[in-house]
Image (cartoon, rainbow, N blue to C red; front, side, top):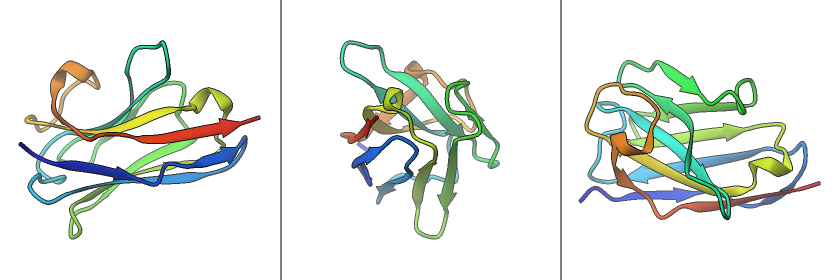
Length: 123
């Protein structure tokens, strides 16, 4: 079972920035489609950003222009840079890995999940 470990969650004020990181010792962030998801209390888990093995990225409409997904292949780490944060971005954020080179940003595609890191944005 691949182990994904998220970090970087925090409490910030509206307009602030955070950078989430996802590290893994047994999963290759460069070979497979990786993603970031979030889940707020009482809501479904939603895809935030994904990055394919060729580096192509895609984003949920709600975060386009504010969030950036990237990876450090040498460190086998996935990142999510979040700028201009809004209270509606408050959620538990999860890193996820699939067994595909590229795929739709849907939870059912991903077979490996981290435990999550909490992001809270206050107004």
